[in-house]
Length: 245
Image (cartoon, rainbow, N blue to C red; front, side, top):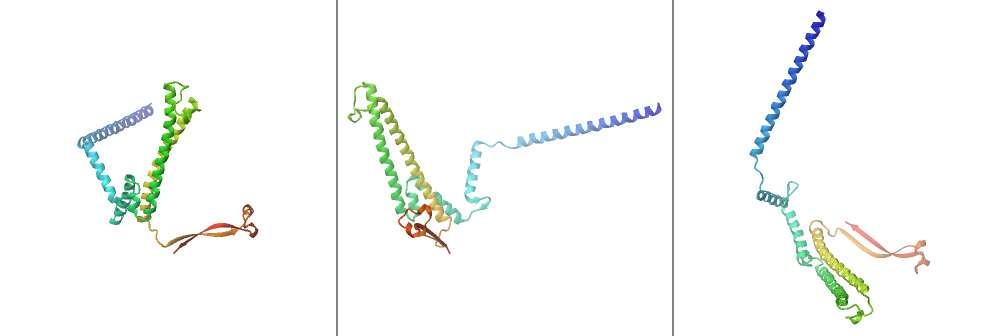
């Protein structure tokens, strides 16, 4: 009986000790959380919320810094001038086709006529399909508004109303496609000006590398035995020679 009482007192004291330690740990955790909350509130109160004007000013400053730094490395004057020339070339071609090619010099006297030739072709093709579309549209509107048996355009006497709708849609589709192709041609002019400026200013393409294209004869195979030189077991071809000094 005395041993049992001793064990009971021992386990009771151990349980009380663990309860006191858990309470101390809980109180310590609560005090730490209270301190962290007070610090967070103090920081939130002291940090001023960024206004819209301040955000715009900060973004402008970041963009301005990006012009003069690349991955926290300051750009030299040559790099800045090269980037400026590249930007000027494509922006000028965007405003006026061929202007960027003239800025880049080189073969601009060949490129500019090609650019304007493509734009002029796009205009004349658009004008044709616009006339084509209006021709069938006017006839269709006249027949619907007046009488299906009455014809306006003598060129379209043999067309039914369904045929007029089909050909009208065909002309409108080709007209819209011409507009897209012409806009793409304008965009291609901008891309060419930018790429040409990059190749001229950012990469050194000099006379150290040369390329030569010349005709040659190749050994004939079974697939190329139908040409006039098949009896000599040779076939004409093209040879590309590149020299790097």
